[in-house]
Image (cartoon, rainbow, N blue to C red):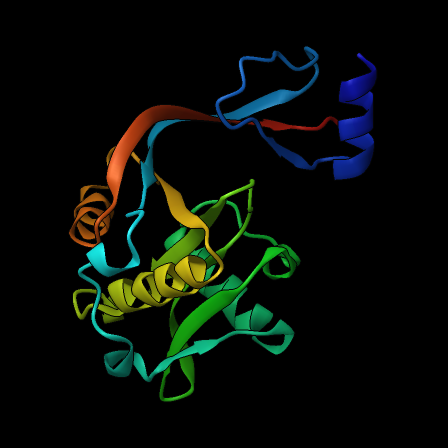
Length: 187
């Protein structure tokens, strides 16, 4: 029970606990918010096996910084790629594409268990979809991850067939099914 108390203190009243593939049951006063199935995909081990566009074709993909967070939060709010909070960018490298000054595509590296780097928050503004921007961002992230010696992995909702097809074109393959569960801290 102490673990739940510590988590509640960390998240604060009303905070959201994302229980990624955890069978743990929170205290009864924690409100369930969502339960959805997804897939964990692993990227190619060999940096040359990706079919992403060559680096030279991605000149509009740039590194994002703290000054970009408001625009990132706006894009995430309109596309719902999964958990992304004001300080998520501090977890790793985030890249994006701007058109006419507006941020229209992002993706980044969130967690790095030994030998691996997780690509997360991949999203494209609705009006900019179908032009390969997500593929450019993910391809650039895969390049960066391979330069560190890690192997990329990511998660996608089972029903997101468009994203799944993109990731498979980029050399990712399904590793296993996962379950995302969210609970709201009382308060």
